[in-house]
Image (cartoon, rainbow, N blue to C red):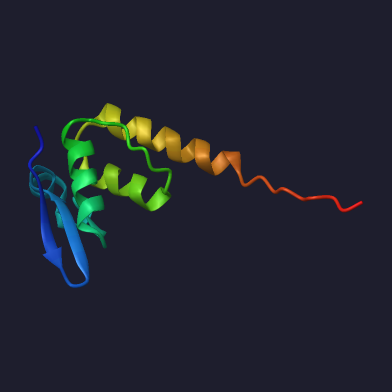
Length: 96
């Protein structure tokens, strides 16, 4: 199991994977989050390999940065790729 911790930082929180820090360095093993509740959610999702409900690309990337599990990372990368390819649908209400 990953040892993921949450530390207060100026204006928010750092979510840090301590085992990944030793292997890849601090830069590739942490993320900045403004809300403690979101930081806890990311930590819990990563520790228990839960698929995130969010579709926010920054938060999905945060999951990747903190996780060690390669299959979990690939699933989230696939979700990000799908979201980018999908594009934004525009709705136009035609006036009569």
